[in-house]
Amino acid sequence: MKCQHCEKPATFHITELTGEVPEELHLCEECARTYLMQAEVKEDDVPSIAGALAQHLKINEAAEQLAKLDQQACPLCGITFYEFRHVGRLGCPHDYICFEEEIDPIISNIHSATAHVGKQPRSGAEGTDQRTDLIRLRREMEQAIEIEDYEKASQLRDQIADLEDETTG
Image (cartoon, rainbow, N blue to C red):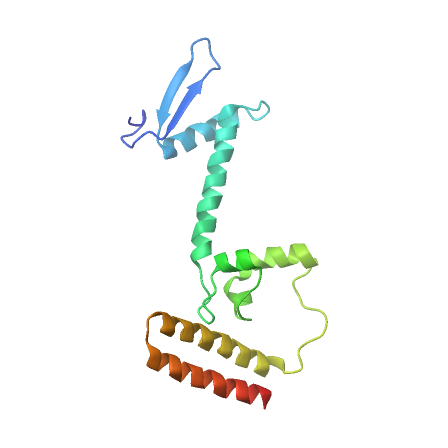
């Protein structure tokens, strides 16, 4: 069935029971969104099915945005936002920059601030860079093993061993 307002397939079938005679509407998603937004504005003080459907459309939009966000990955360690949401841990210090817009509200909600106050690691920024390099190299080594590039994997293993030796000193 096609939309009553355009030529797209109708995916929303709405029956309006507000008048004496029930009115059936067959609309595509875009036309349904427009129709429901108009209904929401007209009946702000009276809850309606149209308002509930409009709310459902907003939830669907949020889900689509989250799906796009879940695909975003850190260029250094390769962790995706999806992995962060499910595991609850970031992969490297660069993730705070990579996912800043999404993480700041979460951190602010949990800690009531976004600036760190407290102890710092003794190794300082240099140690953090080494840990980030280790994380990146381990991820690259796993990828090399997956594609069966064992020569590259062994080179990366050696680089990891060298970095770990430097760290333990």
